[in-house]
Length: 75
Length: 261
Figure 1 (cartoon, rainbow over the protein chains, first blue to last red):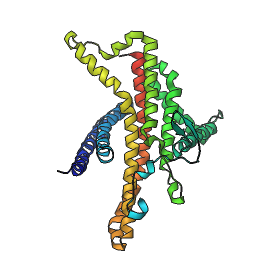
Figure 2 (figure 1 turned 90 degrees about the vertical axis):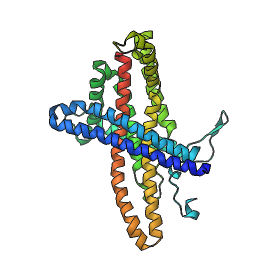
Figure 3 (figure 1 turned 30 degrees about the vertical axis):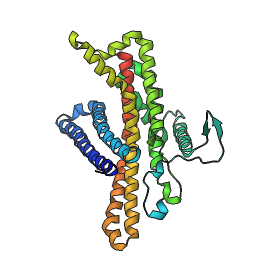
């Protein structure tokens, strides 16, 4: 395969990582909402942890985006 | 490039260009006043005006003062919740960080492009978010070593680690500690960059499909425009959430330095 084509295919494959991160972020907020509705009184105290989980899940998706950008523009 | 080929370049918005000619030489580099510097200055002015309007210390707060007190109270609560009573000492730093990132993110989203201006998001550059992350990390190191001396290294060995596991855990914890400034800076930079590229790509769809004919415009341009409206709303949310996450993670890292664990 041509090196330029391989780069673009790789950048496309990196988008799978972004999709996986979408599952992760959805899981974080979904689980939070599910348990927050069971015990609304405890929900407000856990908002900090919610966003830590969100940040961790999102970072991995953003790394996939960085890989795609490096393949297209840098490599 | 955009004009002759009919292709919209989504990366053009991130280009840093000097606003005035001239500048001076320093160590082989030309130092000029760039659009990045201009938008940082605008951010500073916006934060300053916002804070001045709300710091009149009236006994019965008006709407503006209520807004400012909402922000300060929010950061103050966050520091107290995450670090404890000592956390209020670090509230001014985290508050400045939060307000700067929040205002920079939102100013970059203002659609002054329709009147011919060029909005620039300063937080979409790793140089700027990286420096903010390094400042946060330095504060963690300085506070940690000043308060605990070399006892600070016990941060890397959690309580109750079995003896044979200590070298392994130490390396893992040290790595996860050292990667913090990178993840902190990278997260903000990539989140802002990705959103702005997405908006420009969709804007390119709208313009090119409408130029290709009314049928394409209705088929491709209109759904893209609708999507852009939704994504713009999402971008405002992302701007706020990323500023919050940066401040939250900084407060958690300072907590590690203040209290160990």
